[in-house]
Image (cartoon, rainbow, N blue to C red):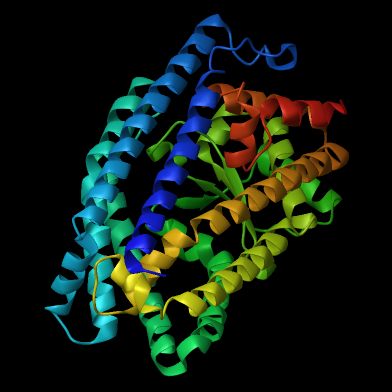
Amino acid sequence: MEPRLLFYILIGIIVINFLIDKVLDFLNARHFDDPLPSEIADVYDQEAYRKSQSYKKERFKFGIFTSTLSLVATLLFFFLDGFAYVDALARSISENSIVIALVFFGIIAAAASILSLPFSYYSTFVIEEKYGFNKTTMGTFVMDKVKGMLMTALIGGPLLALIIWFYEFAGSNFWLYAWAVITVFSILLNMFYARLIVPLFNKQTPLETGELRSKIETYAGKVGFTLEKIFVIDGSKRSTKANAYFSGFGSEKRVTLYDTLINDLDDEEIVAVLAHEVGHYKKKHIVINLIASVITTGFTLWILSLLVGNPELSEALGVTQASFHIGLIAFGILFTPISELTGLLMNFLSRKFEYQADNYAKKTYSGEPLISALKKLSKNSLSNLTPHPAYVFAHYSHPTLLQRFRNLKGR
């Protein structure tokens, strides 16, 4: 394929993907003022519902503004041969292909972080602050950014270097080696995420002995779930929004409760939420998701191995000297339609899993406190309770509150 034609195909994919997202956003926004269905009308009083509508509209407008600027910046970078410039800059530093790639992606990542910083600041300290969610200090905000960049460099850098090294010695078969390494890394990350990554950003403390812990342990014993690690995380240092999650497996499995969750819900509701998380484990959702991720990664790497060596990919981005890192950029864009389809499939699967976990909680504990908990969590986060079905289909990993309510009620 002629490089210039390929260039415009890449531009077309970027623009079409943007337009589809914006159409979905506008469809969703048209439902912001819809009356609440009777089953969940008690989530908000009139004042709280007006506040939730205002929050949704403000986030929508901000999202349109930032995504449009991002599109314009991306297109300018393409049309002004930004990739060729950064590639030349990286090559002026070293002749080693791995070092060149690391410098190349390092420059792009640093530039993207700097450009997005004002928008991240505005989102946190203006919008989230305005609606009472933000608890992040400037120190925490800055350190989160620094830690995030360091983690990307220290984890992503060596992984990328290893993949390029595989490519140089194994040629088109590099994807098998890369797939094996990424699979092992994913398994280890799933196992030790709470032990190694979370402490870099949050403090975790064991749930203290008391009535809540006793109720949790009683439930866990009832369903045959060995649970020794129950932790509370200081989510309130950043936001008032609440959450709970299950992580790890084997001896490393643990349940983590946000301190905001404990503050917002009563004990029965917390145990019901925990029962939902146990349902994910019992139904092997974590393992299934991991296997699906491994298969998807293998498929992506295989397709990459077929295309990345094509010099036309580099030429399409204005770079005369073909390289793995430029080919990777072009491939990432070309693969967008496929990744969007796999994303839809994974979201569909995730929503099915949420129903199954809800049903497990209802069967082994009770549906009513889970419904009550979901309503409280929705209210406290000013959730959109009337999303457009197309938006839900494309973006939601969880069913809507109304869908979960009807499922738990058997309707």
